[in-house]
Length: 85
Image 1 (tube, helix red, strand yellow):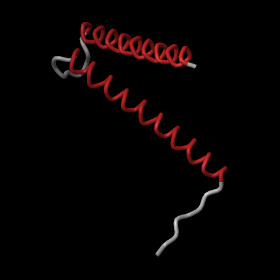
Image 2: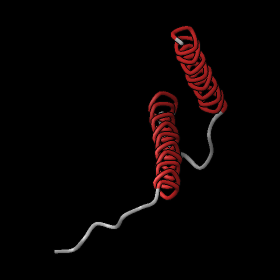
Image 3: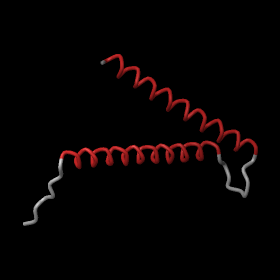
Image 4: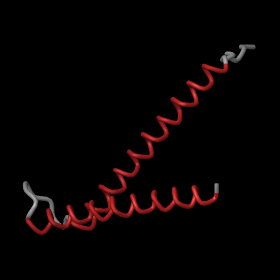
């Protein structure tokens, strides 16, 4: 039988902090992938060597609205959390 390694309190805190940071990175990457997929499907009708003007404008607007919405939701959740405390 192999024994599980025993971590000190400091090591456990460092590990928890590391895992939290990695989870945050993964959530950001997932958000970027979702944004990319959504805006691509919405704005790109055909694949060419270059985006046309309407596709470029659509992508820009899509990304801006996505970011605006994400920031709004984060702010709203923070406000709710602060009012509950």
